Structures are given as structure tokens and as C-alpha cells.
Image (tube, rainbow, N blue to C red; front, side, top):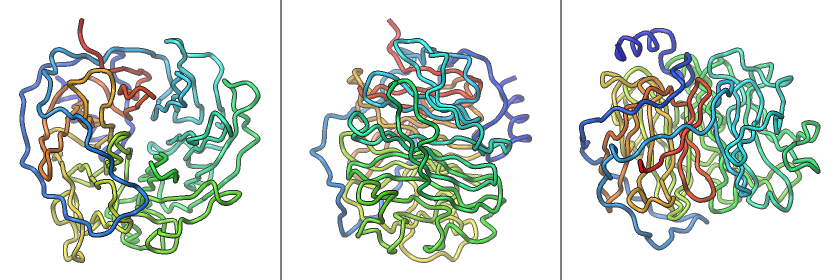
Length: 407
């Protein structure tokens, strides 16, 4: 029955991050442990401002997933797509239609923290309010940033301010940093996160349609299909960091639709979940200290395989991938677990939107262990991380879950 449902989802929303409703509880089925062969990581020669840290304790083997569950915390949200923490103990959840909700002390507050439904265009399946990041000094300056598609279909990165009420933002305080014309309604990316260097990182998709018809992802003078890197403290809106490799906002390129990027809070390593085309979903990785200018290969490559082929030398293949033949359709990048359960420490968790499968990645030197851990009934739109390093799961039908040990 589950595979029949998967086929129906694939036929309606192939290669899309957001789909139809699913049951309201995260049913977790036991899975058979599997490992994929490691993918070598190309060496890099120069460093950036992001320094590597001393290697912390990390798990060398995977815990028994049957001893853990994704426990429900909240429900009734309208197509949530992101979850972020501001350091106060509250969780902020993005609803695709253009609202930010607060989960505080286990309760979903009735009033929205931010409501910009008037300017968010969310009619397309991959459009809407897609990303949120709080400034590292949010407690002092009240600045936070969002990534959304507007009513014209443009990709917008904007700054807002909190009001005198810590549970209410000021919707009139918007300062637009970037507005990028998008030729098609799909492949918008949308993730925002602050790096350990204090810069704002943003993931934008290649502009949509199929096969990147305009070749945006490989153009280093076009912001689509990229990871951007912005200095939001040195100018009224933003400045381009001096060591950005192309003299513009672009930090990395060759991406199709980066659906969630994150930095390991202890090692500063970068992980990117990049949604594939017709066959392969991928997780990309760069060690802390890697320079800007990495080409992740799209649309010459899909995963570690030729797509158009004949690409330039130096493209970086993913450290993990899975095929649509295995039941997947759209990767959702996650986080390295750094919470209270020591046995999970250092394991990167990621999932698939259509199948609800969740994998773990363990890095051991230059090799990787990749194991299927959970089989859920959740259409996974995002993972989240709180200030304590606990990891959350966001479901398209309106639920929020947290990984917990079964007592």
C-alpha cells in the first residue's frame, strides 16, 4: 500500500519538495541496515575565514534506530517548510503561505510572529515563504531574514525586525536585500543560514523547468543554482565579502535545487541537500576551511553520474546519493546531530520527501558510512535544529516531531 501511495505522489509531484497531505503521526517501521560505498572527497588547497575546529567526539557506529522515535510536538500547521530557533527556547515554524508561527513551551501560539501573506506568492507547488535565519546578534539587534517568492514569482531575500513584543515581528520593517527574476515557478531553493564566519548563506535553485534550459547553474554571473554569501553587517542592506570568488554574491555553484543547507555547529563543515532531476538525489559536503568557488556539477552531473556530460574538470561529486529506483523522489537536507543523546553525536540526518525515509551519515576521515535508519509516513519538508542541538522533523501535513529515545 505504501509503495502505491508513493507512485501516486511521484506521478503528481515528480522532483518536487512539497506534496499532498499525509497521516498526522510519524509511524516508524524497522529498516534493514545497509551501507553505501564511500565517495571520495576531492581535496581543496586554500582556506577561507571558516576555520576547522578540533574534532569533537562523534559516533563511529549507528545507534539501533528501533530504540528511538520521532515524537510529535505540534500539529495543525498549514504546510510548514522550515523550523528555526532564535536562542530563547522558542521554535519558529514557517508556513508556506507566508506566516511564521511560534512553538513555545510545547504550545503553538495562536498569533503569527510574522504574516506576509500579502506579498508572498505561494500558488506554485514550490513557491512560498521558504527560509528563515536569525541574525547571530538577534537578541541585541532584533534582525532576522527570510527567503520567499513574491507575487511576481521573484526570489526575494529580505530583512525584518522584531517589534517591542518579542512574539511579534514588524511586517512594515522589511528591507529587501536581493530580488532575483525566476523564469519558472519551480526550483526556488529558499534556505537561509548564518555561517560560522558571521555571513549569511542562501541557497537558490536553478530557475526551474527541466534540465536547466538556460544553463543558469553553471553561470558565475547569474545567482540561480547557487549558494550565495552575504555580509549583512557592513552596509545598510549587504556587502559582498572580499574573498567571494567571482566578485559578486556567489560562493558555490552548479546546484539544481538546494533544499536545505547547514553547518555542523561544532566542526563548521557544510552539508547541502540538492534535489535531483529524474534519477539521483544527493548530499554534498565541504570541509571547514574549503574555499569558495566549488562547482557541484549540475547540469553536467546529476549526483555522481553524467547528466549532460562533458563538464569541466574539478567538479565535486556528492558524498551520498540515492536513486529514484530505490523509492525516493526529492531529498531534504538535514543537520548533524549535536544534542543530548551522545550516541547520535556527529551523525548527519537527512531524508526524502516522497518516501519518508531517513538516512544517517557518519564521516570517518575521508570515508563515509551511509545507513537507512527510519521509514516514516511523513512527507518531509524540512529538518530543524534548536540551540541545544536537538533535531526536529517537519511534515507537509502540518506536524512537527523531535528525535527522542524511547523510554
